[in-house]
Amino acid sequence: MSRLVGAIVILVLAVFPQGEPAWGKTVVVAQDGTGDVTAIQPAVTIAAPGDTIFIRSGEYLESNPFIVPGFSLETFVALTTDSLTFIGEDRDLVIIGPKVADFVDDCPKGFFALEPTTVRIENLTVRNVREGTNWEGGGSIKNCTFVGCDIGASFRATSPISVTGSLFQDLVDNSIFVASGSRKVLIEAATCFNVGSGIVVSGSTDIDIRSCSVDSARVGINFQQSAVGTVVGCIVRRCRNVSLVSTQNANLRVVDCQVGAGARVTCVVDSATIEIESSILGLGRENTVLFSGATASSIMRSDVHVEHPKSIWFQEGSYPSDPLTVMNLRDNYWALADSSSIADVIWDVGDDASIRAVAEFIPFRLKSTPVRQTSFGNLKRRF
Image (cartoon, rainbow, N blue to C red; front, side, top):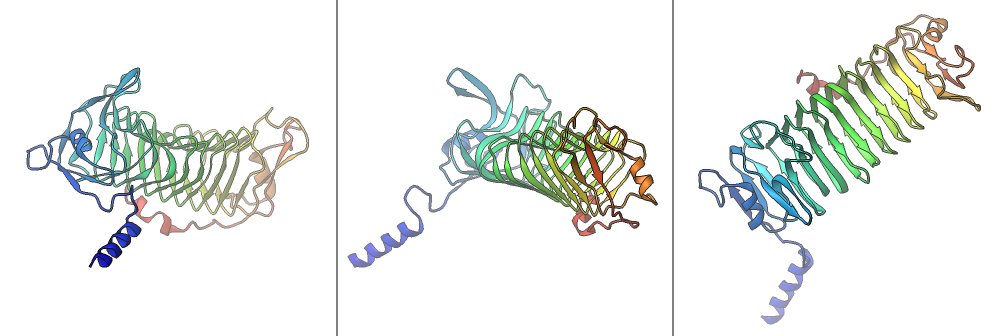
């Protein structure tokens, strides 16, 4: 018998190594007293790593000072226990945050962690806070709403993080901010509407943005400070300033996207690169594409909407010397009948000899490039 017990113990330790919870309990938050606690922060306090906090419907208006040496931060959910999962009973009926936005400095926070952690947040709404989330580590945000905040979801992914099926609406600044040093981030089926910026990625690698929509933002999708990633099957439209930005040594690949009108549709500056393929670039009020100090980039097999002489603009002063910078704009549909008409809407060395850059656009297509509609079906129904 003792040998059998010993074998069982060895098996359990092999499956659930020491230091990792074999399973977690569920702590229920219910304002009517039918759960384990009536507020979210007490649930965090009694939870252990690996536990799930299930939040029943209600408006959770309680914030607490997150005390750290030298200062405190007003926070609605202080992530003081590692590896927690928060699940709301109903996305529209579990509401965390004040009734009215009142930002003071960096507060109040929604979900906030001072130390690296893993957190999963599902099926709830965060409203009217300075930052909906702010943490470093890993985890996920799934099927959530962020409304009336300054910033929706902010994080540094030192382990994989995913943001899926979530809505970001009526925000002052960024919907999603991926902080410098992040890696392996998936953002999928996110909707950003009436926001300052849609998705901003800074100094991060292996960023995968899929089937998202950004509508009525100041800036749509912005890769900066050597960020590297892909944008696939997204719709970006009605941006007040720029729809797509690659800047400060960033490297952005865009495939199968519909990018709508703004002051500028695409902006590539400061030694950044962009590769656009099988996409639709709408007409910009000032430019469809601005290249300013960008390195070799390409737009291929796409529909490029142009109208005026600087629709494709290599900015004066940003390419001052040889060798000539060459941008590959071949195999696109321009809705123009001949090469001279296309040349007329591109402002490069052919128009100003001091601009040491040129767009190579031959051969070009005479028919529109179909974009795979399967990428957009669900998104189109949202508007």
